[in-house]
Image 1 (cartoon, protein in one colour):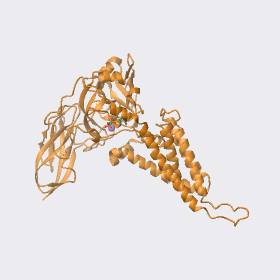
Image 2 (cartoon, rainbow, N blue to C red):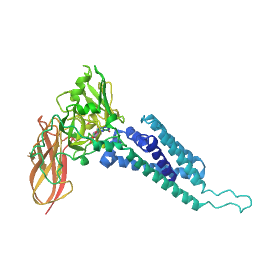
Image 3 (cartoon, rainbow, N blue to C red):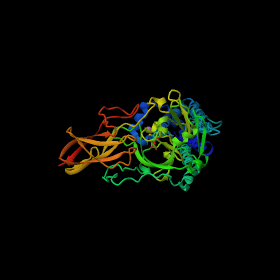
Image 4 (tube, protein in one colour):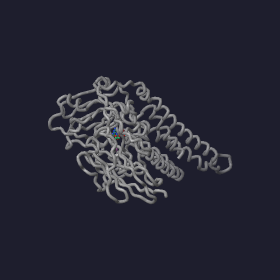
Length: 499
Ligand SMILES: Nc1nc2c(c(=O)[nH]1)N[C@H]1C(S)=C(S)[C@@H](COP(=O)(O)O)O[C@H]1N2
Ligand SMILES: [Mo]
């Protein structure tokens, strides 16, 4: 295991210095994420939520430790079989890095170095445990040199750990991107978003704020390492079924009349009552106006957006050309996009789940057709189209929380971006549905808070809610899991009211 730590450290350090996008950990993790079937992705998000990446890292570390322990044993029994296992692992990382087209000139180098160091270390360390052949003129057979073994094992483990830390430090140093981001001055919008109306924020303790602070905004993506793109190097290419190809640079984008929009973003993996949803004020340029320059041909019906790290989303052309505020966003809540939310540029499309619309680190828009192109998650069994379903949730009182008897309040959020919410109803202990009071909505593109006064009687209670859309649709009680196109059902919360 110490040899594996040494190899991993050497690989990560090599990557940090010579092939930043080809770290063995990142390419193996990325490949696992891309290869994971839908149910695994679902399970990871259900178990770990937005900590899914940490969970994956721990999983990789545990598997590596087990394989390393086994290789050590094999090396002891039959050298150099353990070293061969280590070198083979490094070779796998090298090949995966090559296949993933990371863009580095020497993508295979970190894997090769990791394998060589781990293999050499395991051979050397385990070799010390074997009795040495008697030397001429001395007593027969020497005991294995345990002290040297432990000393060198410690050197390998500590050295590897230091290399990992150094690699991260080197990466952070090369992340001049955060410096560039911090120094950015956002252009003032040509069209400002209307201010959050008085009465949009009910200010109830425990209720989600109507505008989600960036630090609390859910993050979901397949990027183990957040892409770092210098705006000066950024450009967006619009091509495919268009009359005219368009290339847009960062400076050109900033010079355009930008507009502010307030839009609620939701993940298709959000369970009923879940928290993979947030609302922010975005600043960007209407994609409709860019497409107007490119002039899509009449038979096109989809735009395949691509990020710098190869993620793709397929958005109906119509959603990008109709009158909704589909934008190429550069700012989130009055700040340049945070790196993990797509710096420098992402898409935001009201009414569609993120996986079919909200491409972060976007660099390419290909105008195409649904019957000709498939996006990242469509290839993995998710629906090609992903309009956000009508949903509502109870935030207050929290599930399982003790509530004091007497006058209290039930409150939550409701949404169907771009359609809008007309009302919310609450049912207590299976009784009649009661109309909750809606807060003032910012717009039909955002979620809305709601509340209902409640005289809580001591005992166990079951609370449910359902939303009614501006289309007159009532949120369905039919339960569906997130896959393939979004969860449905009523959110239910059980609470105990103290006597
Ligand atoms: N490049 C890239 N963009 C992406 C994704 C991704 O994996 N890679 N995930 C999408 C999904 S599934 C969602 S729900 C939203 C989440 O955006 P957020 O992390 O800013 O909340 O981003 C979308 N954009
Ligand atoms: Mo998502």
